[in-house]
Length: 396
Image 1 (cartoon, rainbow, N blue to C red):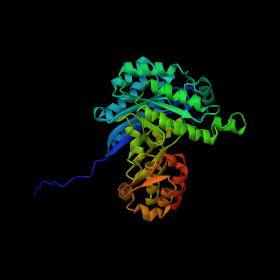
Image 2 (cartoon, rainbow, N blue to C red):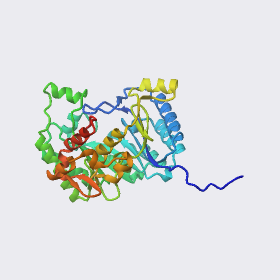
Image 3 (cartoon, rainbow, N blue to C red):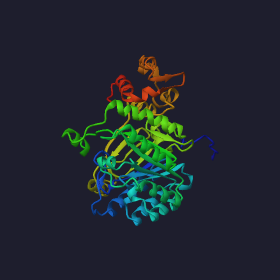
Image 4 (cartoon, one colour):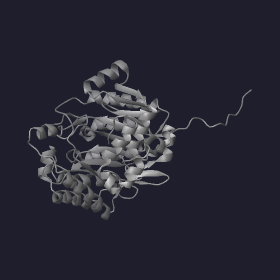
């Protein structure tokens, strides 16, 4: 006999979608993300497989895509027709009008009026632009191709096209950089009125050109005390200009926080598409192969580009919570930690939180633990010690 089953079905959770196009004009010397110089490569075959994977993964997921981040590489380096194809594939598989945020990465040298209009036409609401510095010499150290004057002109092109929100990435701790030159870049960025500014301390990653230059004595890393002074000055200068620090490296005007990145930092599920992209849905994490040729071949032969996959253990989930949520000014929620892991935070980490609080590195109350201003200077140490309690190697 038919019945009307009014019991609730499985909960439909929100998730993020990351789409990776690895092509850049050149490979910057400090960059350790998977990217390849375009150098006359044919981009169509990769775009075709990325679009196929996007359709398969979104269609095969029972979560609702709420944010999209189209990054790289430099997606806006694609020819107009292929850029449009990716954007159209997103629109065909995601309710673009219902998205909380749709971000595309760009470099100042790749922002053109036609492409900016194309982004707006396909529902892009936010562009994240790698400005990095307003100083010629510092851009040369980073091997960036754009000039300082390209940055304001590109911001203007995006605004005239109708992009609602703009983020500028900046880097401090560049070899040869002074506190004064860093503050000049910071203030020039503020003058452009972006909605969001991300400020990253330069790191010398393994297997990068910049690290090789350091090992040969061609560049000298920034003094650690100077870098700390730059970081603290950043918090003050941006705060005075109306940009609230909400994550160690990220500052936003009220309501303009990166909703996609917040999904990562709050350990919410996300789909990754494209070579080297990572995804984590329903406790399964995967990473696609970091090679264009193999990605294309595997998509054709196997139907996916996955090089690694794992089902996360409780310990790994706990580690993810520590490494991600402690980056946020709001800190790590004890209720969230229990929901994710089934564990009591203080039973797992013992007296470490109280020790950090006594040192002035964290704030503790009955709901959360958050890094203090001084704690953000030594975030790696705090996270590393907490990770050690889980017997899992970790860091920020």
